[in-house]
Image (cartoon, rainbow, N blue to C red; front, side):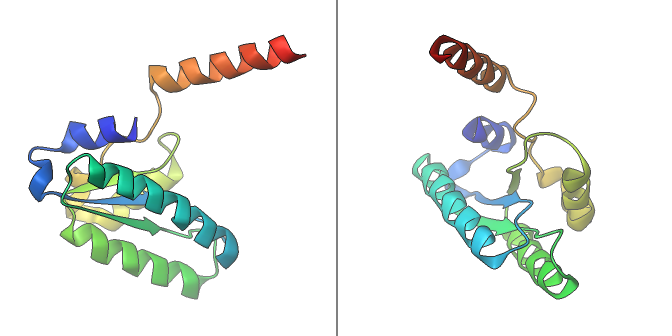
Length: 134
């Protein structure tokens, strides 16, 4: 789904830079673990032909100093990117904050993961399998 969202915004992947952005965690250790997982997603997207893929978290619920540093990092990466790919389940408050941070560059923002028929199918399949195991 992530690659589909990137391709919806992409015109020439070989010259385009992407920044994947997530809400992030309050605790440094948890945020680091999330960034490591996001790094794997970035490597996957890069393998699909995009020039460069960066990652960032907003750390929106963290203390002000941490949050401001994270937002500054995201802004810097988003300024260079052609596509901003939100690693969010759905539209909501965090997506609105990303739009606000991007300001005039909000046209770079791809759609969040949901709604998508593949995720709905995945959830239904998991529920069915759980029922079979019970």
